[in-house]
Image (cartoon, rainbow, N blue to C red; front, side, top):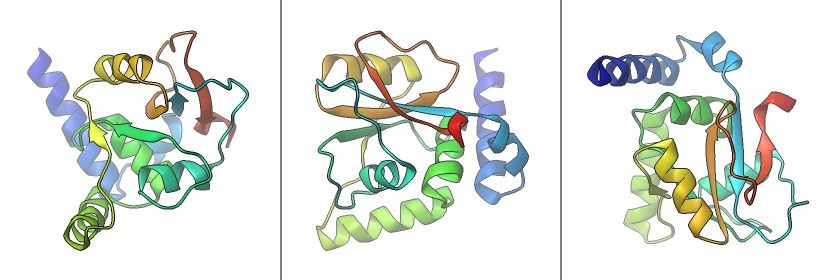
Length: 146
């Protein structure tokens, strides 16, 4: 059963990355959560994109992501980053080769991601909008406000 669920998410992620399932991405919302001292902090889409793509940002947060085969990552890439997974992987290859930046660390599951962010001040991650967020984490951006 777990294999079927994983396979379904992989197929959906591939379709999203190819742009064939854009309507599904539009129906699937994402929250970006952070472990910060200031719960009033809010980010816009450009700031979130900059954080997760290793670009200069006014906010000093360490991004953590899900693996490429997850539906949540595919939706995040579509809605926030605006690039396919293949383009993102190519970008990170160039960044690593030039020594300029390193891609975010990856956690295998949403639960692992939330546990990591909960335990590490100054970290930020994206999760499906319907996931219950621990009260000590702050939602800094949400796609359902688009």
